Image (cartoon, rainbow over the protein chains, first blue to last red):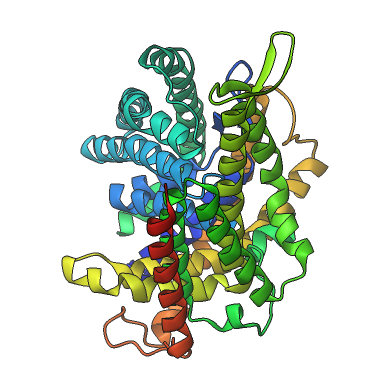
Length: 193
Length: 265
């Protein structure tokens, strides 16, 4: 009989935040996209925890990961715009996935539907947020002239949204591969819960 | 690289800046990040510069540490400067070279924005250079304390932050070990097209996840065996103490803010 206490859940969330932060450091740009759009696998531990303990735990991983990243790496505008954007994107991706997966009684089909929903939600809302909030915030903090609405929409439609869709697909595919490998272990963990 | 990841950049010391209460330092940095945007002429930038310089001198840190924190950003600052010089078309023309003209407003704007970035980086790195991550976490927990009333899990968040920070080096070592083990079997992690990276990351994550999970079980057991039962009524080994010098720090920052508001054009 394993303990499934609140303490243990908290520690698992903390450990996976650590892993998530470390994976965040192994980021790489996608060919053909601007270099500030980088892919990393830091969403995978967050997804894993969210699928195991529910969406809120995943959100906690995202929050801790970005707080640590800001504390250690800082932000070149001084204000954590990038970290905030990463947090919102991660949350939008994880919450629907975990929610749908748990609604579908934790089957592979549920996971796939959830990941598709998460990818779509993240891409659409991050596109909108970049247009109205994040890009203007960046240019304001850096003291540049504001980008015109047309320039912003081109960047969002040709850069950010396709990038988010590809990022979502890459993370979804790797998460499914990982989940298949871990499923026997996973089933054991949730059964005792 | 490993050293950098581990403790952020904390440099042990006994200077005045080191001895400030982490809460005072956190509040100062928070306020500073806001008031930096008040500055808009050379007087206000000079005031900010003096404050930053004073803080650096008081911290008694060797310059090399600050420079190390600055290095990755230096390129961004230089780039920002030149973008402003090239793109802003205000004021008199300073000199022209055919179609290429440099305007007074552009140079001014470039210097201001670069200075703003420089001050922000300096002050935030001073915080992480003179405060341990654990102290910062304690400070955040204490500052967010009032929000407990609204149901915000402040204690839990702080605990998870400190555990996460504590285990970064351990998990990094483990990641390194797994990567080496997989490399010995012919795996490639840092190169190749995306499909290859995808394939490489799975055999890395599976043992890492299971290992972290086992570690968590052990730690939970150890904590509960020692009577951990949440934040309610928990005592601390190291208490934060607010002293007169911390009040002085906040007062000096308020004075700086008033100065900026008075001097800005």
